[in-house]
Amino acid sequence: MIPSDWARASVQREYSLPVQREELVGRYVPDPDRPSRQFATLLDYVEEHQGDRVYVESPYVDFDYRAEYSNLYARGFNPPPDKCERLLFFHGEEFLGFCVVRPTFKPVGRTALRPPPALARYVTCTAPHVVRPYGLRFEVKAWPFISQDGVYGRCAHAAIWAISRYHHLKHQGPKQSLAAIVEAAGTTVVTDKTSRSAGLYLHEVADAFAGLGLPTIPYQPSNTRDLEATLCRYLNSGLPIALTTPGHLTVLIGYGYDEQGLFFVRGDDNTGAYERTRIVLSGKEAWEMLLVPMPARILVPGAAAEIRARRNFAEQAGATETTEPVLDALIADEFRYRTYAIDAAEYKAKLPARGLGPEVVDHHRFVPASVWIWITEFQRRDEPGGKRVVGELAIDATSDPRDPQPLFANLPGRVVSWLPGESVPQAKEVPVVDLYDTALEPEQHGAS
Image (cartoon, rainbow, N blue to C red; front, side, top):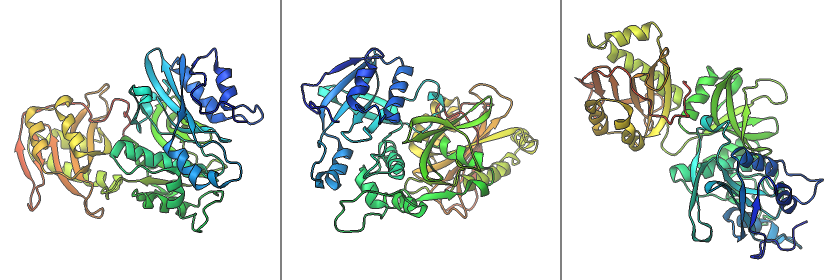
């Protein structure tokens, strides 16, 4: 039952946590026989951050709920309210995130909450969310989350929406509503769109991403060589991965290692934005298919980029006496490889802070590059801490995936560039830098 003062300016504006948690639950999940696991998980995350205050912004007009409302709810005889309320979460003066609450059976709408402390360092796919309640401005870096409403949008729509909204916030892609996701999936084909949504087949999921300008690279887990490395390359790049399991679609948004080995962080609209999971290849929870939606202009898959980078790096390592120790280390398998896609401008902006010599920084900055590049870092396996990169090589992510093109590279004492229109690479000697930092954020720590 929707509260009588729903979306009015007279609502209670502030709640204290954890003291008034049950009052908050009673307002937004009033039927104890129909609990909201998503809302409970959301409050658990807030309490993990020692969140102590919740502010209520009411009424709140939400872009996504309004699209759902106009496409379905408004056509009913007794529709729910057309406005939402937005909850703002704080620890003291520190902003933790927000949740838009819908007046529907599944109330958790558009949500952005800082990853919980236990998983924060492993989440590689976060984007900045800015809110401006009452003339104030707050920002949080988080994975965008929404639960299905169980009527108009289902789990697949929610997962596709989350990936699309992430690319909008992170890479300035178009802003799509949940209604646009339903439309892009091709499941609404009749003139009268007043109908419940069913789940999506895999080809409909892929079609939806393509219709949103995010063509996908598919992988079948049971048939993918070196599956862990494949997943880590994309997650290192901040590229979320859609995961299908029997009857469900979720999103992989990070990874890490614990005493049991490799685990992944998953956003699941049935539970919450951040949960641990592991690769499962059989049984009821088996991973059936992985889809990697790629920003426009990334044409080269991660594996193809790494293969070409390793080949070109080995060629340059044997080119001079100075770089021969690198070739020896390659032959002795003393390196691990970290491959990731990155915006070239962002990559070049990070160069001075990584411990590279000024000659290398200047060289890489002035070599022409595509908007998106693949970087393969060659790292010492036995070096703990941050400074363990020996050299790296950039691949044009927009080149022909059958023949990825190198752009530039550095090894100790040598920089190389493959310039457009030149048949042979240009190289020159530079002062030797033994080890330096990765270009990834600190939490993006895994190797491919």
